[in-house]
Image 1 (spheres, rainbow, N blue to C red):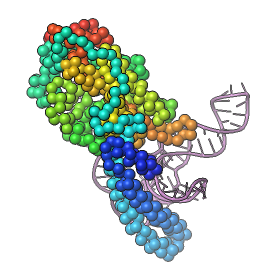
Image 2 (spheres, chains in turn orange, red; image 1 turned 60 degrees about the vertical axis):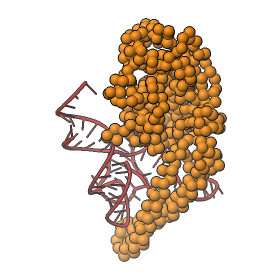
Image 3 (cartoon, chains in turn red, orange; image 1 turned 90 degrees about the vertical axis):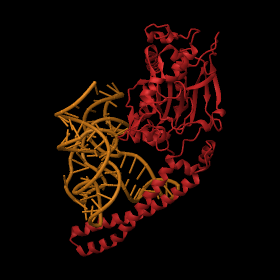
Image 4 (cartoon, rainbow, N blue to C red; image 1 turned 180 degrees about the horizontal axis):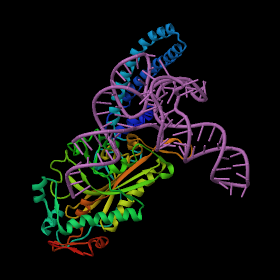
Length: 427
RNA sequence: GGAUGGGUGGCCGAGUGGUUUAAGGCACCGGUCUUGAAAACCGGCGAGGGUGCAAGCUCUCCGUGAGUUCGAAUCUCACCCCAUCCGCCA
């Protein structure tokens, strides 16, 4: 949600930000509504004051027993009453339009975000490790998983349809192990607080993180009008909704391991095989609530936390700075972590770390009181995957596959798998 | 699912039609006192908006929306949410 005052004072910056995202200028329309609203409000207030004054006089007159004076004052107020009612209705209708318009406008990119239309314009920031070398032709993860007898898309389709999977044995355990490994790292070494949040939320929460109103189509909705979370970003960030924090409380850092549910409405035909794009997947999420001046450093820190998971798993990856055209709605700057998949011979997104400025905080009224002057400010929010567990499993299968189709277990993971060193058929 | 109670400022909590400009307390801030702190005492202290260079003036807000009234935290209706008990259930 944008600050009207900012749009009023910097309409050219506002439109430039939208343009960078490939959107038409909107400040003129917004400001017209804003001016209309203010004019309406000012007029309305005059009438309200007149009514309030008259009402007080009526009270006073009646107190003195001067019914005649009271009677004539009541006459005068009758006219005001109608005007006020009309004025309120008008203000309400303008507010409605203004809020609807504002709610549908994405966040503005920071200045150091590269201009671009789509993912082809993203910039590589750095690269870590090297692709593993194979003496055989590496397979894709679904071939490996199915051959192991531990990954079953056919049965999943019987139960739930396309884009679901049944994991068994060592792979089912691997999901749990990966989650535990990631959570331990983030909580014990990086200071995040582990949270087990609700997986179903109300409209307000989804509006707060900006899945609503624009992206209802991408979500699953229950019959009693709740939403299955598409990411733990939603409940974790909304932990601070409608709150007034103390500056000393910040930063707040939360992590959670949850399933995520996505309708994948516009993704027909994309990544139809394998675990890459599912209606339900597991993810460890990171969320930070910080003061504005710490936004940038926290963003780098969070990205580094996610990277550390890949480093310890010995996975080759690169860090991409997303261009203006590829960023999510609420983000003002985003780093994607892309892991190397030998089977696909491609880098694929495995984490996305975004800073949202006060965009989400405004939507959910998450404020904090400054130590200095006790003024209230909107907090800044950040979120990132640390990491997408399903895709991490894909990366491990493809990067650690061996000639016989078995999977070597990365050292860091072995303690979480009871010392298991290799995942083999029917293991 | 059934029954009951309830939603008031950062928190607790009073308030059933007109000095409510929302009592009082806690927390917080400033001051007095003190070597310093605590205690005590004194004072200050809600949010959002409009207008103005500013000091200021002013409007709205007591879950949400509609209604009654000259005037609503207070009365009426609908809705939302929360709590407790019972039933069911992991």
